[in-house]
Length: 283
Ligand code: 2AM
Ligand code: CA
Ligand code: CA
Ligand code: CA
Picture (cartoon, protein in one colour):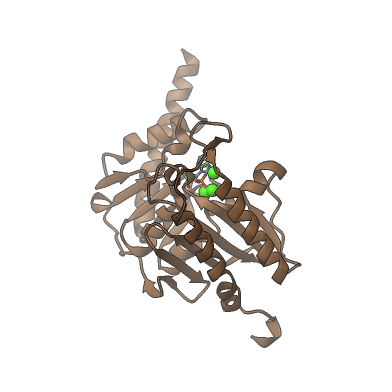
C-alpha cells in the first residue's frame, strides 16, 4: 500500500537487474583461482566477494537504512543478529565448489526479510538461465512462469536430494550416515548435488520430491525457503522443530504428508545413533 512506502514488488524490480548482471559476469569467467576458507571443500573465489560487495553497495545506496547479512562479510565479521529492520540476506554464489568445477548447480541468492519475516526471494542460475522469484503470498515463478511442487506423497517414489558435503569429516558425519542408512531403504532415488539453494528450487519446480541439508546458514535459506513455500511445498527443521532462518537445518518436500514420512524415518535413525552411542560408552 502507499502508506507502507516501497512495495515488495519494487524491491524485487530493483534487485533483478543487479542479480542478472552479476550472473552474466559469472558466465564469462574462464579460469578462476580457488581459495580454501578452512576445509578443502569450503572454497571461495574473487567472484563470491565481488558479487556480494556490489549487491550490498547498490542496495545500500538506494535504501541506506537497510541491514545486510552476506556469507563472505559474515566470514570475516561474524553473522549479525536478525532485527526487525529490513534485512537483505545474500549468498553471492551458492554452490561455489560446483562453479569452480564448471558444474551448473550454482546460483546467486538474494532474500529480503522484514520484521523477521521472509517477504521476497530471488535466485538466479546463469548457467541454466533460470531465474526464480517469489513474493510472500503471491506464488513462486521460474522465468516468469508460475511453478508448483509436484504434490508427491509417496516416499518410495521420491527422489531425495540429500546434501552430504557438510558431513565430510565433520561433527555431522554420524548424523548423516545413520539417516542415510535408514532413508535408503524407503526412498525412490538419491542425489547430492552441492547447491542447497538449487536443491530447494528443484523441489519448488517439481523436478524433485525432497531436499535436505543440515548445518546451514541464513543465506542458504533466505530466498529458497520462501520460493519452496510459495510453490506449495513444505519446509521444516529436519530435527523436527520449527524452521529457524538464522540456524537452518531444513527438509523441503513437495507436501507436508511426505515431510511427515521423512521425519518418522529420520527420528528412527537418530534413536539408533543415540542408542549405539550409549552402548559404546558402556563398553
Ligand atoms: P556455498 O556454496 O555457498 O558455500 C553444499 O556444499 C552446500 O552447502 C552449498 O549450498 C554450500 O553453499 C553449503 N555450505 C554451507 N556451509 C558450507 C561450508 N562450510 N563448506 C561448503 N559448503 C557449505
Ligand atoms: Ca561458501
Ligand atoms: Ca550457500
Ligand atoms: Ca556462497
